[in-house]
Image (cartoon, rainbow, N blue to C red; front, side):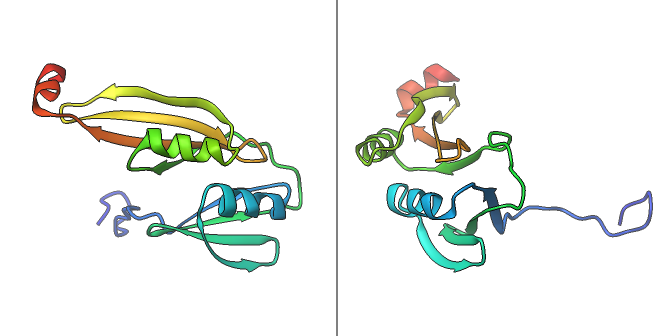
Length: 139
């Protein structure tokens, strides 16, 4: 219970769906499905849905223009260098190539950034484990 108003506490812990507004649904569906390789689920009026792990990812058009860039969705990849190379081969343009962001005690955090056709930023993130020697140096 919340002492302020005796209402039960709410803890938002699981993301069920993420939505991004796009200007051209067909072009963006092709980008996310064909270039990024997301699993297409279904279409609805002015929307397309994909499965991304346990999270549903939706793209849709809006009745009014929306400025992209305010929100970044980060996708976890196992090998950021391989993902970057594969996507670049498909014609995906990167705003930032894979780079080291932080050295953690047991892994290194790497990120790369690309944009969809509407210039919505997309992050790729990868936690690369290090061997015991390099992990000891970072601690």
